[in-house]
Image (cartoon, rainbow, N blue to C red; front, side, top):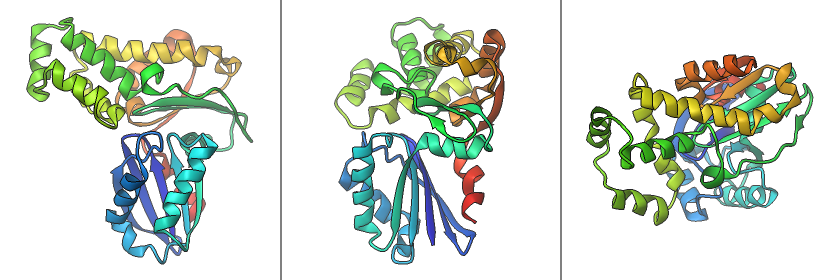
Length: 277
């Protein structure tokens, strides 16, 4: 049996294969090694549906956010090995899965826009190393957390129309004290921030929300994509729910800055599964 995983900061998609056929697909919380500890990872694994097959799983391919750091890869592999003693475990970055799912061995730029954001250039054979995202506090332009921070500032700084603010507090009956407690004193603040993004999707007709999304993608372009010489000739593929749900605004940015959007893929693991069957 082979267990495949695509892990962002908010959720992990798991697919279990046996003799080349999918026998189970499930989701758990995200397992970004920067934001979860060993106990959380082991508890998540051992309560997941696939764990009853632990002794039969011979190979694990884990693609994850936060896994570009070699020390984090080694640590995460060790934690997995405690639960899957008979498995050969490989830890990869989420961008490697993104390239596998979208590039089709052709030169391109591949971007992830989910809870966090990142990008790489693929020359058709190799992924070119670029600087990493500075995560949700300092960076992650264009991501769910970046969008959520703009949304929350708009609400709590009273920059929105009364109608839009009332709709927000109806969906999220919180005050500033609760918000700050969740963000600064409780774990996985990035996941908490991303939980506000569905409000933006539901209220995208409002000008204030459109501007938030447009500005988030504009900053992703200005801070990252415009610095790449390849942006003039390579298609740009996007992976993740943010890119999919706000495709219209993403296309607007592409038209403004004259780059070509290629594929938009919400769940890259489904696209890459053919490599394992």
